[in-house]
Length: 166
Image 1 (cartoon, helix red, strand yellow):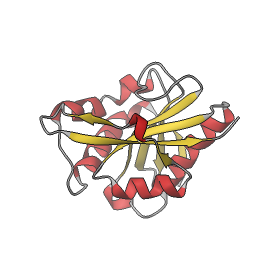
Image 2 (cartoon, one colour):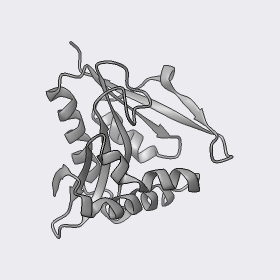
Image 3 (cartoon, one colour):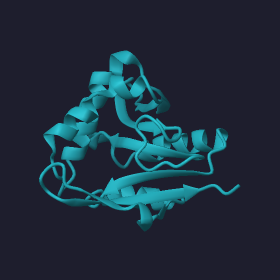
């Protein structure tokens, strides 16, 4: 498996992968408007890095958006912090270390660019992702938790932070 920045010809596949991955999680709340946001990978990639995990056959099997700090696509990041957004692994690639490899790549970018922390938010039904975050050193930051009711169904978004110190 290789983790690298996404290429323009992969953007459509990445968008569909993220929507499909989110929709495949038991208990997920489908929001057609947000799904369209997830599909607009080209807009994100014009502003911030979109990372992909590529399998042995060259297929994109996971992706995340790395937000280097406050600005475009940041929701939680404060000055000196990076943020992870729109993170997903293809359902048929789960359990193979794809999510961990992508998360490690984002953490390493944050450390290399001297961010003091990396933050993210996750939905209540994304329990496997929450376990992964905790194994990598992320801790809940309840002060950043929030509710989303844009889909008509109110659900809580849980915030996590990995502080690097210094």
